[in-house]
Image 1 (cartoon, rainbow, N blue to C red):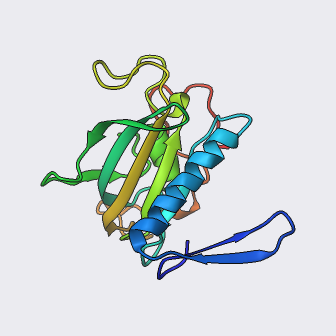
Image 2 (image 1 turned 90 degrees about the horizontal axis):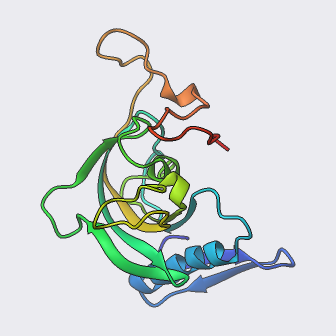
Image 3 (image 1 turned 120 degrees about the vertical axis):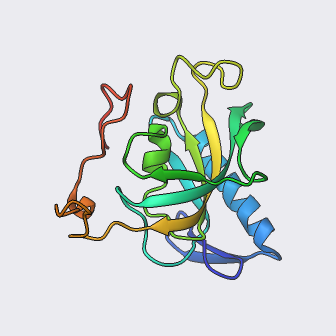
Length: 189
């Protein structure tokens, strides 16, 4: 994904190609389909797949950063985007979260790393990184793969040495993700 409705890619001969789209929406829709194609062509789907739709500006987010997010979540059905199960896009409140705190599903923690303010990304999350075998009663069936479009509206970056209690805050150097409930047996890879 490039600014001004461009996307670039390499073919199987490692030649670089660019595509220009007539609108930002067309570019984002195409990029979303690329993410779905990655999922459908993956022989083993055991980690989060993501595709940037819009790059955003500024520094990429990392563990410890606080974000405000607009999102829509769909069930992945029939090899594509199925029914919406959750969204805050047309609501007044954005979702506030601290990346790495374990308050959201593990797939979000992984899939949003590196996003920038104003950026949008498509995430496809396997069941083990989402709600697993339990699902969410009345909304997400057990063992569901999920698709999210997430947009970072606001960012508050953690700065080294800026802990309010005087302790050094250095999430920038931590290679391991924070533990998340029900993540037993899953590695950071």
